[in-house]
Image (cartoon, rainbow, N blue to C red; front, side, top):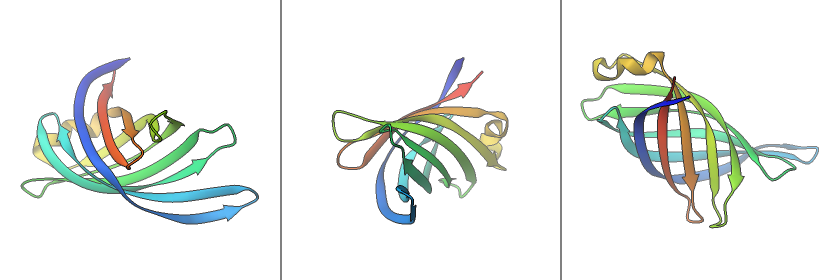
Length: 134
């Protein structure tokens, strides 16, 4: 069940590269930059995820990244999700993130599974929300 809203994020896909091909299969690495907050603490971050388009039109992705607070504390994350194409030329992703941090104001993230709703548009802009899974 969805719990408390952990944060909201905005950003941009900043790069792509093909990292594997074979037997009709391709893996694309996508780099992102985001701004947002966890439990009201502002962060800026970046990450990468590997996207694997599937025959049914969906996209499976796995990624990792780091977000930084204004005072230099970090939160690392890794996760996975499933995307579907949208009418606006983007992709709508749903999935889960797992966190690690020593930042005192964000230690609560260490025990949380974050469920995300992230969407991109045709211009590669990202918007998203992150909820605690209860």
